Length: 360
Ligand code: AMP
Ligand code: MG
Image (tube, rainbow, N blue to C red; front, side):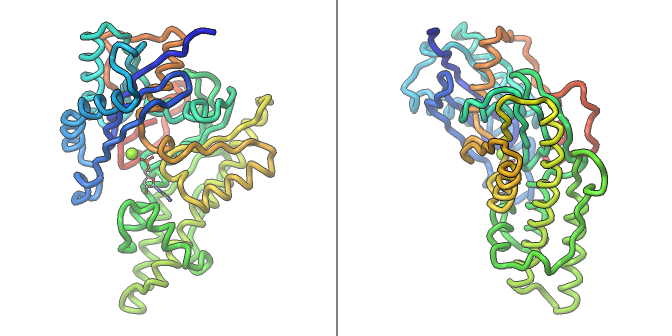
């Protein structure tokens, strides 16, 4: 048997500075330095602040990841780095750091697509066989991908405006709940009546797997203002009912669109049908349970990697780099940082952009 490759992964495309060491499909270490507190006062990620923080923290983060894996640079077979898509200053910080390490050590450099990192995570955690269906659902992304190989992805739908995580965050802001909005809306929804406020189910009447979430946020704004005008403010029960009504609307859309995506995927006759989710919104219990039940109905394995590997991390970058390197995909010092880098080059661009920029 050939010895599994050992790669260092580096991630800096948004607001998490991360480094990890992965050997084969074993995560030896995964270190993430979040930047939430740096951006909190601004209501979103400030690209310049993010880039500076990445540049300051990357070397510490890498040292920590190597130490936690009990490895040194000489134990590595290569250096994988997110080369896009993402906030360009952050991506550049990571790419320059990886180039420096590669030039100094002679280790191969492997540029990785951040979205490929997310999309290949089910292979790292569950050794899922190709082809599988993937729903990437986070603060900046929402797309269905059929993953056919480490470098072959078919996008069969996605959001044409906001990402669901972004809609959760905006809804929380409108309701006076803390950020990040996903967990606080989910918590408030537990005590709420999901039927109290009638909200739209955008694009459900349109065929296909494309989605839209920006109208939901506007509907929440109107419903909130209606209640506030009537009563002079929002009670905790109002917050809970609005949260529950919003969450069930997002969940209904994701579940129905997943049903359609599963039908498209089934046409490929996969030997071991599998559906995987990734991204921060995959943490949502109601959405997760709905998708799990749908997969059970269709006899499709449901794969939800642990949350620390679903949200931004560098283990997924190291692993995607490992598959690319094993297939001979090595880059050199001309590797560019790319703000946009769609996984499926053949698919028409989706309209609009998320808070973290248009990615696909
Ligand atoms: P990511 O973009 O993958 O780093 O994930 C962050 C996004 O996931 C943010 O927009 C969060 O609000 C969202 N999120 C995190 N936890 C939950 C949850 N329990 N329910 C819904 N959204 C969530
Ligand atoms: Mg993130």
